[in-house]
Image (cartoon, rainbow, N blue to C red; front, side, top):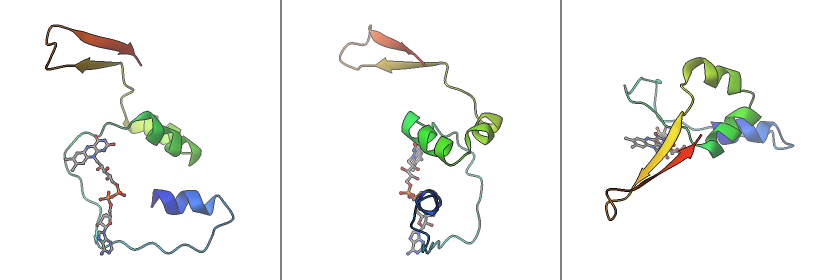
Length: 76
Ligand SMILES: Cc1cc2nc3c(=O)[nH]c(=O)nc-3n(C[C@H](O)[C@H](O)[C@H](O)COP(=O)(O)OP(=O)(O)OC[C@H]3O[C@@H](n4cnc5c(N)ncnc54)[C@H](O)[C@@H]3O)c2cc1C
């Protein structure tokens, strides 16, 4: 659906979408939307809607099993 929506913003407007699921259902899970996905949603004009339902990332912390006492904190 995202690809089709993006193609409609180009000269490619002959797009067929096939979907076997008959309904959109909640899974009850959280989704981490990574920066490249946020970029695509922004280009589709969905950033405000995303802010309306999402919680902006406050920080990224990477843990390593080989060095359990160390971690790297990256400000979002
Ligand atoms: C438990 C879990 C947690 C995840 N958490 C994250 C996360 O937090 N962040 C993240 O970025 N990614 C996450 N992912 C990965 C993410 O879900 C996938 O990378 C992403 O959904 C792939 O998108 P897609 O469009 O390629 O495929 P899908 O989302 O799988 O879409 C494929 C669609 O094609 C339909 N389909 C299949 N066969 C046919 C057919 N023959 N005819 C018609 N329609 C058909 C299916 O019904 C489906 O809707 C998670 C995955 C899992 C399993």
